[in-house]
Length: 330
Ligand code: UDP
Image 1: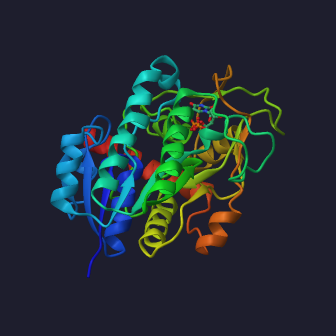
Image 2: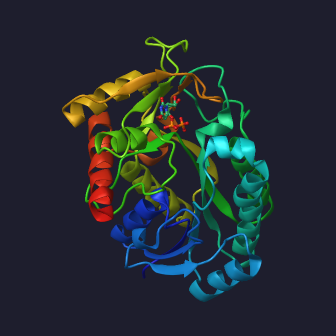
Image 3: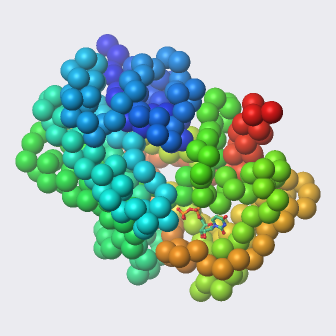
């Protein structure tokens, strides 16, 4: 008998990939999304769709009662770090308060499997690299704190009820579905690879390299870029683990190695096959010099074998999606 998953934020960048991965693995899927940043067209046609806010108790209780999912994957939220500094209350509402409402509704509906989309931002500026799951959590932005609060809620609720959860702490998610079905469509993205691809297709005339005086070998920041489809597959693996009775756990999601911004810029130039204007600019506030996952726990627990651990492929799929968006807009 087919299992059913509810994906909150399923019209967003990562959620739309997760929805495809669940459908391909034989799950039924119901997406709930308020379309504040997601796109209705990004949701696979085979998934049911509810337009609504998971932070509204009436909406979420009705959605769970109607669809009776076996598992909830909670990806809805706000994820722009600089915005969280300017408007922290938005982040505590969308990421913390809304999660509390959803978790309460999930527990009341008797659903025991809950997956949460967390972030490396909960570690702040870590004392050493790579980052393992037991390192101190000291977020330096309201975004990171708003996500960490939800991890605390989950920890305490799991201790008090039969609910079990997996927290996936994403590093730098990039790229797009290799089959071209979905990609990153948020108009206000601040992500390096997205912005660089917008430069290749001519939406921008240049992109910035934000800071070249960091304590790294070439002076630019190092990040662990992870292909969104590998991450989507991890969601399927993790939710199947929970539904099979797995215990609550947190996992860092990254490949375990990083690239500097200057290295990304070089791959961008190779993929573009021509001149791309990348300009040295001041540091961006709040950027830790290095964020690289210790990927041993997730590899060990799930026998994870990533398929797309290749920066060039990540950039190529992001670029293919950017070209598609541009052709559609024309
Ligand atoms: N970055 C950059 N130029 C840009 C956007 C980002 O140099 O136009 C840098 C940023 O300072 C950071 C890295 O690229 O060191 C990754 O930033 P991104 O916003 O993609 O992800 P984050 O690490 O902030 O989650």
